[in-house]
Amino acid sequence: MTTMIKDIRPLLRLLDDDSTVVREAVRKQLAAMRRELPQRLQELGEPLEDGQERLLSEILTPVCLEELEETWLAWRWLSSPEAQMEEALGQLAAFLSGWQVTVESFGRRLDALADRAVIEYQCTDARKLADYLFGGRGYEALLRGNTKDYYAAQNSNLLWVLDSGMGNPISLCCLYILIGKRLGMRIEGCNFPGHFLARVQHDGRTWLVDCFNRGRFMLAEDVARHHPAANPSMEEVIHQAATVETVVARVLRNLDDAYERSENLPHRQMVRRLILKLMED
Image (cartoon, rainbow, N blue to C red; front, side, top):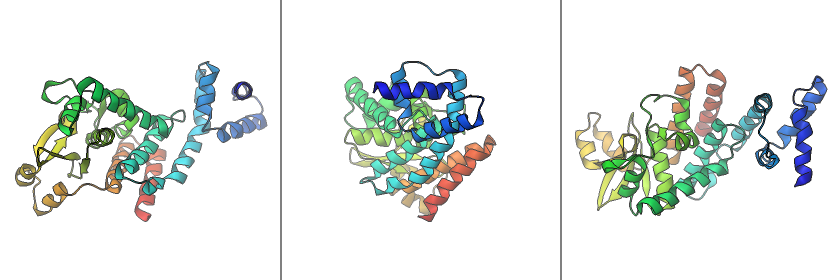
């Protein structure tokens, strides 16, 4: 371990070397150790200087993008819809959070929040979990709808949502689904037009859950009958769980819209390549 740590210090010092040849050699070495670099830097026990962090980001962001595109869709081979969703959205969250973040850190965050839900609120069903997470029935919300910056790209970054406590309808629903899975609860997505919802069985009835609005529970039959958008196809939307592909595609479309609004062409092109891969396979 000591040998590995010593190997990094001279590389960091040479990041802005006067020689183009030296800088390029350093870049190649750091790119090759991208996956282990965050742990090695942590073991150094020294924060990066601003200039070093900027240069590392310039070097490693393209590497992370290449990794994302190469491994994208590998989640389809996992054993359950929840595992597939967690891997796909974890890949996106890790990329959007920067090169120092790994996909595995997303799962650890979900584990910790699920443990808290049991210890702090004895969450034994989907209704209690919604109250705990979203502040229903008078409880203080851990997660809430980001009404002030609804279209921001970071609302689709589930690690950012966990850090900030704010998200859009689909990101909050996905966290509800994934945390519920850890607690033995079956929570599904509902591909409701314009406002993604969760779907649960509770007390023998089918409920739709609006995670964006404090985890509000609504009887599915009432929504199908009385919602302004109700039409014959609405029954099928409400009573059929959204597939993982549908969820991931909707998250990607939200990102595409966010990057169009912010005029971030490189990231928008990246998202569109992921969408194309999803459509092609």
